[in-house]
Amino acid sequence: MNKWVDKPSICAVRTLGHAPRFPATEMLSMESLSLSSTSTSADSLPGTAALPPALVDGRARFLTDAAAFAAEQPAAQPLVPPQLASADAADTVGVDSDAAAAADASTDILVCVRARPLSALEAGPLGHYPAVLVRNPRVHVFAPLPPNSHRGPGASRTASFPVDLAFGPDDDNDTVYGAAVRPLVPFVIAGGFATVFAYGQTGSGKTFTMTAMQERVARDIFQYAVEYRNQWKQQQQQQQQQPATDEAAAVDDNDTGLDIYVSYFELFGARAFDLLSDRQPVHILEDQFGAVHARNAHEEQVASPAELLALLARGAALRRTEATGKNATSSRTHAVCRLRVANRRVPEAEDGALYAVDLAGSESAADVAGHARERIIETKEINASLAVLKDCIRNRALSLVSTGRFVHVPFRNSKLTMLLKEAFEQTSRRQCRTVVFANISPSVVDTSMTLNTLRYIEPLRVPVPRPTGPPPRDVPKVPSTWTNAYLRGWLAKAYPLLDPSVVCPTESGRQLLRVPEAEFMQRCLRCPGATEKRAKLTYVKLWALHVDSRT
Image: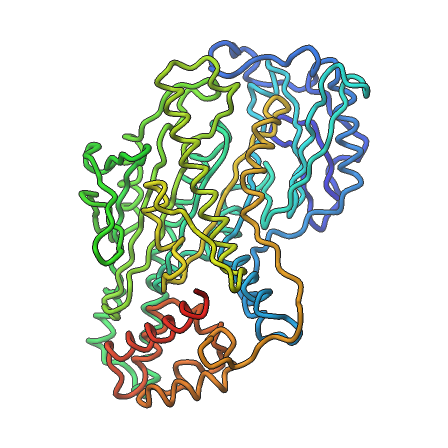
């Protein structure tokens, strides 16, 4: 059982399958802890201030009430991301198409919360104490009531928020990456379009989280590329029913067939600057075919994790930061790191793409009270773009579950969302997945911004509709309703050269639509006589039917 502990590095201790480290009633005194930072001046950092008298006076009652609440909550669930198999709800008897579409939305958009630990300065000289309890998949915030409340000093109200994954201060970067971001790497290798956002109050740990995720992606993407090469070799050998020659094997061992490119730039309002070429201007433009390009963005091919990490470090050093009321080095722009994976074995397929977006820190009116005019204008620009981003993610999810009703996704209202058009446009043929991290501070003095952050992400989770009847089956122009038998018949009739047992051996229509383009085309190319052009046309035809059925 998880227990509330007053400890500098932990705001809520979550234990899975073993005895709690502290009894439910035990509260450690902050004053009894010896901290190496006790000599640090609180006035030396912006936004660091001692607790108001009301929070000092009500500390004991606040923590006691929080501990009692924590003792009543169920144990945290294991940090397991939603299984992609849940998207196959259409194949389950008694689940209608709306519920299946909501399952798609729940797996395509993953909403996570990460609470950082209290810093040594906050827990020591400043006397801050935690006001956040993390019990995956829920986050509880204890908001202090006004000192003149009829409930007396130290009273609080509790707000609870359900999310897909909730990470506490004791969850390290490897845990966060493994549960939320690692599944995106093979998805991008296969030609998918993935985005990762880090949102939250300035000083809540967004850049720390995003930097750690980028480092681990840089490590894994080359490993997955080698695995992809090995799988391709195995498939080729099975198709030819003979082992590859030593010469061919040597070539394969040195060439994964994938080219990985990186670009890094920052966005502020309608302006963009390249972080890999001394902040040269970048223009986000849409061409006559509807494709969005980052014109003048410098892109470099990388061949190893070391090369990729060196470029990321070089770009991060040029990112614009300013001192604000909450953070001495607050990021004032949205940093966009784009990894593009080109598959030379299937050149007709769209390139895989991973966008890692470290959003600028959000600030409340109280945070900007002491800002200069320039900082206030920046804050308005940042908050406006964040509002557009929320609307796009929310409406995109709603569009997946709203049958017979048009849902507008305003991705052209911001350069950031326009850049990520593929992730938001309803007529896109790309398989897209999005991970949103909401970073929060556990400190009692930040409860207002913590609540604002959690309210920001709350609408991003789309509830699964209740079944209203038996699901539709094998509707001719709606591929998401096709069973495997119907799909095989459609494929054999439309494209006789393609072997259904190779292209869709077990998948239903909905399952095949979730296969990234490059993987789909590779299946087609394993059929004797199939060409890249035929594979591409098959993919486009299937998706054209799917898009028409949704719009």
